Image (cartoon, rainbow, N blue to C red; front, side, top):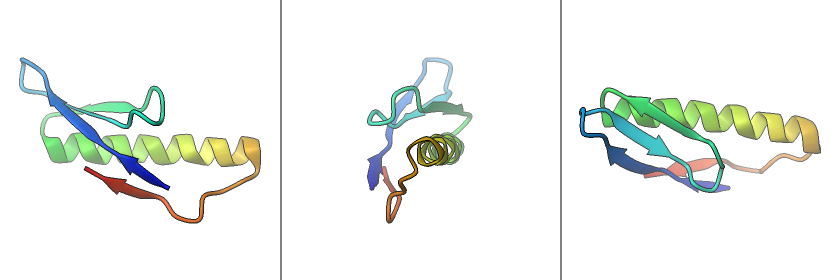
Length: 65
């Protein structure tokens, strides 16, 4: 599975990273790298929860920005 990370910058300088294909998976960071790291970690937790509930796992997880 490949997940696209979309970035935006707030007026106060914070970065937002979002994975639109995983509803609710977005994270803030003081820079783009921090936002990306946080959104990837959150996405992996969401995917792990989905695996536990559905008993199926993707063969591969890949993030692109």
